[in-house]
Length: 128
Image (cartoon, rainbow, N blue to C red; front, top):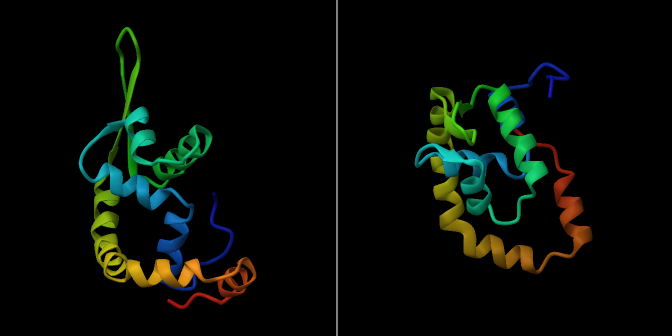
């Protein structure tokens, strides 16, 4: 998870922090308040426990998510956003709005792409 090279720009740094299929969705799920692991797993249909644990660890290491353990007879752990995590969610709101506006077209175009075309499209460099 260590930074391997200097960031080219702010977008490069931001994308590195949210890199991973589930991180943005975890952050979005936590925007409504703290949640236990099982609640997050239910919110994120399709994520494996192993991947969810790993992504939560990375988000906590980047100080976007706080992990709180309650000292109870049956230990309870709750995840919540830090101030930094809340500010990242605010930055993601326009991206979510863009996705909602363009979702039908995105889905239609993606449904017609062959795996070869998707892989070619993924090889374009990012700008930021």
